Length: 211
Image (cartoon, rainbow, N blue to C red; front, side, top):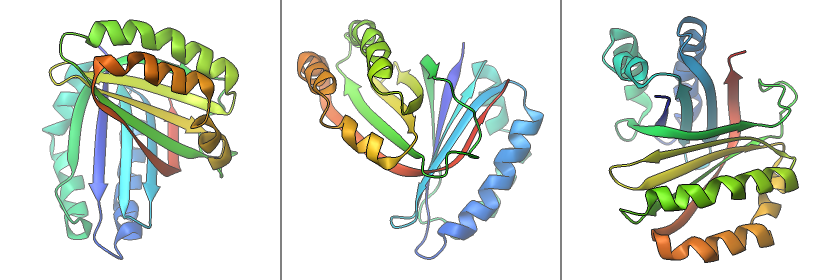
């Protein structure tokens, strides 16, 4: 089963660039050597010192195995002097991956932003919300061509659902917040949620897809 690994870093004040210098070469090496890795999107906010990544693996056991290798431990050792807290790693089931006419790679996407939205679904209602969410995303992508990639994932044990969306530019991402389609969906599905959606906007740092 395909999985999404969410990896989050909180850097020390003044250490954002140093953390990126340690992290990005490791990501390049990972993409070159692990063919099971299908997509990687990294976003960051230098003002808050946060770096977030979403990586899609074709098989869960590959992602889990990497976490126990010295290769991963070496990354954590290099990052540690630059972090305010230990890295946060979360494994979620892939629900859907949409790519819309996307020339992947950050070339040509210099103004792109990465939006993360997460919320908790009431336990026992995950399948119900997911069934309603898929047609919403299809319509959303038809109306918002600037949304190049959507990665949907869920942590079944907790009901946590996350969406990562890459937009061409910040203006497009901001315009979505007032869309009638979005407000109607949130209003209609609110009774299935135990917490409201939380939105995080990051500058796109790196984008990769295999094939």
